[in-house]
Length: 200
Image 1 (cartoon, rainbow, N blue to C red):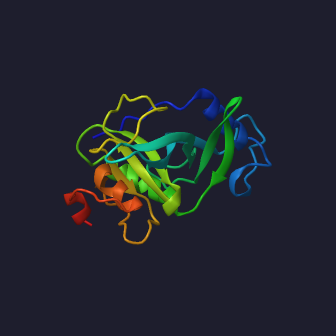
Image 2: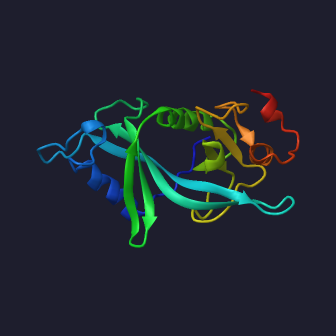
Image 3: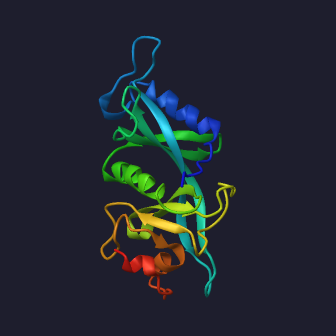
């Protein structure tokens, strides 16, 4: 089922495009094109980045907060489905969304793989990224409400999480898990049995 991507804030997208044109911040030592064509990279697939900050008492929903927007970068001339050239992240400042940094590494390719994997799952989902700093972990969060407000919300019990590679020890990367089963495992809390966890 196609994923329902929400539009990133305009100032977030603009800040990344401006950074792509700036020689000092161009990724991998790239420099902006000298002609009107602009840089060779473009942005696609914006994903809001939420951070897991804790759990409420008992079976309360986890606490999360929106910390950034991440964009995959692709070569303008690359064919559809080609590996991403990297990623760019923005952070919220007092003046709005601003470019933070370019990044590469395994999470970029893993994000792309997880998005392709998510498109084969049943149902319509809103894709997000969920960071779990205490476990040095990043997951693709498939929110079951595709029209949900990006700025708010915590993982619903039936939402799916796909851990990106590299995943922490004992957690299988690229295996979809129900949120109510995976998140308690990350904090040592008890969790209900989840058949998805046994599939990996």
